[in-house]
Length: 272
Image 1: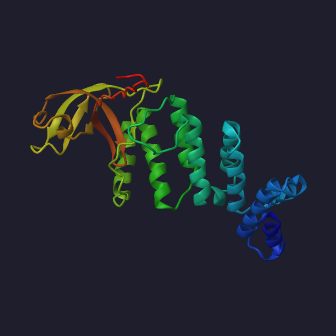
Image 2 (image 1 turned 90 degrees about the vertical axis):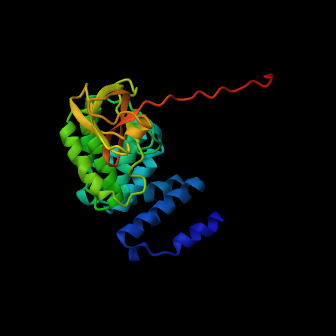
């Protein structure tokens, strides 16, 4: 099978390929050379990939580097950030930059799960903004991700008004996104714990579906959904809310009831 694969690749005239096609051609040769334990062929096609200025070549090299642990991921991020604008604008490269950067910072994929907490410093959050600003994008999906990161970072840096403006724009842009109301992160402390806030009702609709809450510690107003706190309470102005977290979805920050995580006890094999 390997011989057939090599014969198939050898039958292609690389001079007839576009730069993007040539990048894939050299990548396949690199992969094949590793299976054949042919370091000379691997070096030859790695060099060709390095000399190729097409975004696909940058992407393939960065993805390969990222497989070598945290150090390789850092190399991949730096190589893509230092690449020409058209490379960073490529949807594959821009997505890889953000995914690898967040993985390095948090150890988890970006925008996966619900109500995640992160242990990031002010310097880390500022770096998040620099990353978002360094990635030009034309794709809606990647624009959502970048704007979400920017809004989340600004809030944690104390720029609540600027954060609200970013999320207000994102709210309009993400109307067709089914997961826009899913709470992805919680406002987190330096040690990676969800911060607890106190506050009171500014206003709420009688049906408990909409409302605004004042956050004592931040001196700002955020939306909240009264029925998530109580079936019938917290509808009147100045009602004091129970302690809450601040969660973030594509629409922005909102007061979120503190949820008690249930511990699942595993029984031993000799349990009755």
